Amino acid sequence: MASLPGSIERLFYSGTVQAPGTDEQMLAQIADVCRWYAARGPPTAQRQAAALAELAYITAGRTDLLARYARQSLASRHDTGSDATVHERAAQLCIITGADMSLIDRRSRRHNATRTGQRPRQ
Image (tube, rainbow, N blue to C red; front, side):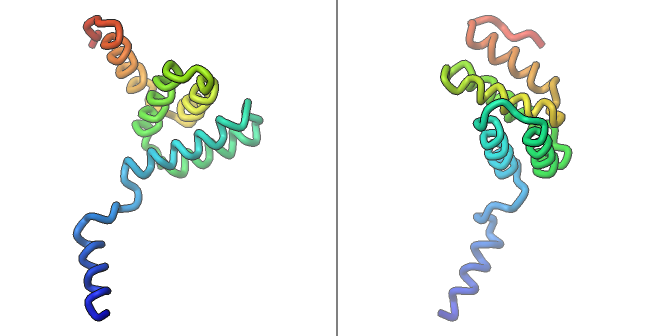
C-alpha cells in the first residue's frame, strides 16, 4: 500500500489526467448545457437567461469554443431530421452568448463547398 500514493501522484503529474478547463472539457460542458436547454422546447426568457449565464461562465470569453459548438450543431441539423430544431436552438444559444460569427461563417462555407465539390472561397 505504501506505493499507492506515489502511483497516483505519478499518474496525476504525468499528464494522463486531463487538466480542468481544457478545450475538450469546455466543449463537453457547452454541449451539455445546450442540449439540456434546447431539448426542453422553445426557450422561455427565464430558461434562456439561465442557459446564457451558464455558457458565459463555462467559456469565460472563449467565443471560439462557442462558435465551434454552434458550427457542430448546425452541421448536425442537416444529418438528423427529427433533432434539427434542437440543434438549431443549441446553436442559437451559442450565438446569443457571443460565438465568433466569423469562425462559424468561414468554416461553414468551407464545409458546404467541400460537400458540393466546389472550391471553398477564402
